[in-house]
Length: 393
View 1 (tube, helix red, strand yellow):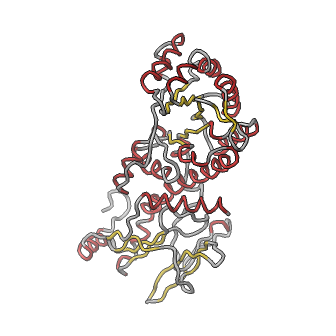
View 2 (cartoon, rainbow, N blue to C red):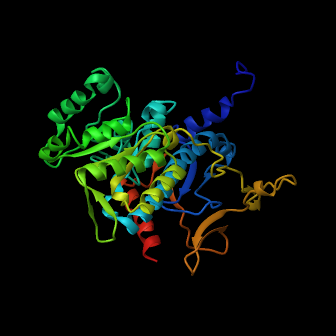
View 3 (cartoon, rainbow, N blue to C red):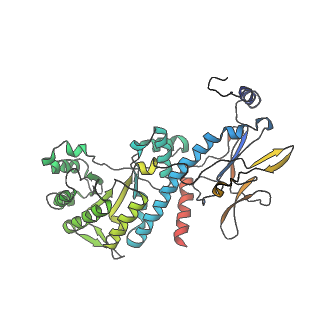
């Protein structure tokens, strides 16, 4: 019992086994997955359903909080990036392209397969492009979801450099010979040696082969300053392949596109799209691939997730519980039995439940039984509905 320095509450767990058949006597309420909720609001509550298990709710904090903060943070960052890119597409191009504008490159940068599955699936709430296979497996396992994420044939540096510098163009031709078919899209990393010379070659020696293939070649710069490099690549490709001016007055490259997959962040995406727009290039021309910044470079503190005791029942009477540290007012916790409500003007607020009857938090788990089983399509629909409403105002 004291092997690890602290007592293990064997009696409490034996009680749960004998009294409840091993099912946890708790009620968990949560906002539906895919909901877009302002920060500083309650997302889930947990309370024990057996007075003898008063200790259980705090015991479950680590598991419950961990399962909420990480995917919510990844999904939130992905959602905000989707808002950003969509703004540029609305101004300069085709908003229908949004689903494939931020590709998940993060699988090799996460700390575990589980992180890749959970975080990668969170990203797929907003976008449909991914190279994180675990996300697809988790979607199938936990949401019975199929065909929720997609990728394209893509070169990586060794499939170029193994040909030798003098045969770089042969590696590109080989890729096209295998994958370039009418309507196909394939990505070719082109910065192994000289990205600008490679763009010139794509538009001269390889130009007719690209056009005749009927495929769209996505050229990937993978080094240097993303803003400068993407603009210069776009200008070279425009000079060689030409472009079409769309109905919004912006140029869309013929036959080729770009994907920026190095050093990608919200700020970098904004800068790249801004400089392209300033130079009359549509956001249609470029997509982004994000790796560790999408799935790994997040913490619980990014959006200040916490789980705190807010109410306790003593002798049948509920009492508020909260913390209010004098040294940091920002850490004052919410008190009372909490509800999440939508006010008459549509604002979402967290309130003490006693005066209210319309709780957005719904029971999802009670005494071992899963009460809600959302499909992945439902999760996506909720998120996309909010995004559509925010742009239609």
